Structure formats: C-alpha cells, structure tokens
Length: 206
Image (cartoon, rainbow, N blue to C red; front, side):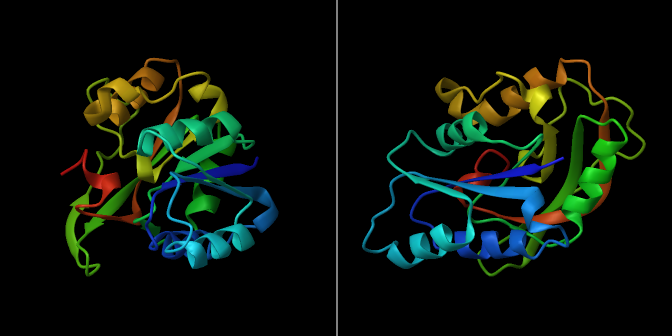
C-alpha cells in the first residue's frame, strides 16, 4: 500500500524541516508520495523553499486558497495512496519508523491508525504531551482525534471533506464523520511528531 502525505502551507519556510523529517523515514521512497498544497506564497521571498519542494516532493501546487483546510481538501482530491497522512508545514516527524508501524497496522485490517504527539514552542521545547487512551477498541464519537498524527484509509475517507464554513471545528467534524463509519482503529501509544504551538496547524488544539 502506498502512503500519500499531504502538507498545506503558506509562506512558511519551516516546511523544509517538515519534508526532511518525512524523507528521513525508514521507508522506501517509491511507497509514498509527498503532496504540497501551497496557498500562493510570495514567489520572491519563498523562492528557495519552492525550489526545494519542487526538487524533493512529488507534486507542488501553489495557488491562492481559502486556508489550511481548503488546502487539505485539495490534497485529498488528488492523493493516489491507499493510506492518507496529513501534517502541517510547521510540524515534523520525530519517529523514523512511523510509516512502517502504520503500514503494519493497516496490513492487519485497520482503517485508521492514531499516534500520540508532542506540542512544542517556537524553540522546539516540549510544552504538552498529547496522550491517548490505552486498550481502546472503538473511538467514541466525542473523541478529539489529532489529525496530524493520524493515518487513515482513503476508502474510509471516501468523499468526506473538511467543512470550510466551520473553520474552528472543521478537523473535529471531519474525523467525527469518518468515525461514524464501520471501521477498525488502532491506537499507538507512541508520539511520532511535534506540533508547533501557536502555528496555524495547532490553533484548533490550544
């Protein structure tokens, strides 16, 4: 199974760190694709970043959009992988075996694999540890799923998309809709990424 990594971005040079953390995975490069959905960053100030992205990623789309969730929706529409993974441009993976662990769980029949994560400040100091329940067989409908440390089956997502009209709760609603479907979920009590507090990708969590 192939993994599609979707990264929304806008004028954020930290995306280079994000992409490098993905390329550092102990996982065959031909088994995952990196899709960058850039919201139309300034071509002059962001030139070097775009050059790096075009050189290392599979697809880079740079055009005006309606924000992070619009970017994620665009990525979902064009992803080719059977497994989808979304991460913010100011966030980065810290476990080089994350893809291997996720794939092993999908091979066991799981449709969603949820990992833990760390919140870090602008100096990369850990401020909070998002832990998950242990031995949870089914995810409750009210449960907040950390979407930037979650792998989900493309078939399970189907036509479900982020609602741009409810920006504050778009991520919660997205996974709540998916969670209504009959699916097998695996929770891994290991943090795989750091989410930068105060960044666009963490505004719904802090």
